Image (cartoon, rainbow, N blue to C red; front, side, top):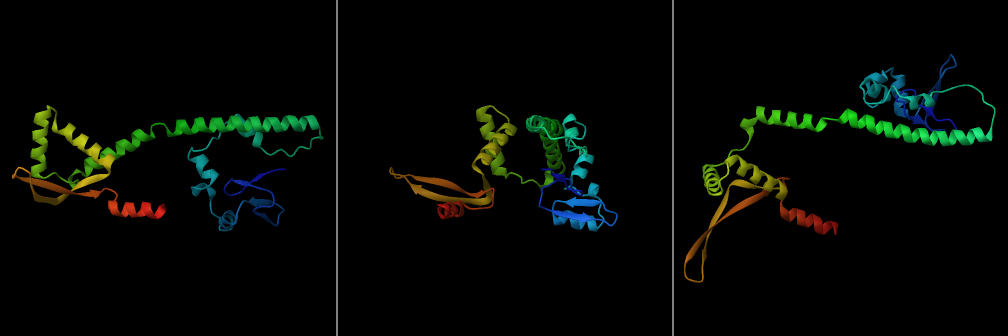
Length: 218
């Protein structure tokens, strides 16, 4: 069973699937789906469409020079049937597929090396250019951080980084201007002032809504 490649996108066109277009000069064009057939009739260049194999090869996202790719070349050479030759060919096809998959993984790792560092660098550049848009701490919060830093003997930057890490772990942040003060009477007759801060989820959803969603899913 021969599996042809799509003339437009390069995907495999399985037998009894897709569309075959016969031109007047006798040349046949095999397409894996109607999308490729329509783009071919509109005379679009597959190298300019990002979802085709031709574009990926030109962009360096696919292996182009490799010994395993030579076995996929079409050869119109008649060969006399031989059972042993067919068995060896089937085993060779499986082995070639394994080698090609391993080489593709190595190719992908090399191509994606350093992507995380580039993303972090671009994110830091974006924050540095738009630092004036970031929310600022109130005076009371700054004074509280300064007192905590003096007590613990650390810098304010370290405290801010620690608070940001805790905020990300809990997915909550303080809402500015959302403090409430109430009085609590102790058993010994004294009065205690309690300051409550309203918390807002970073995802833009309240905890009650999350609890309701969990109850619905159960």
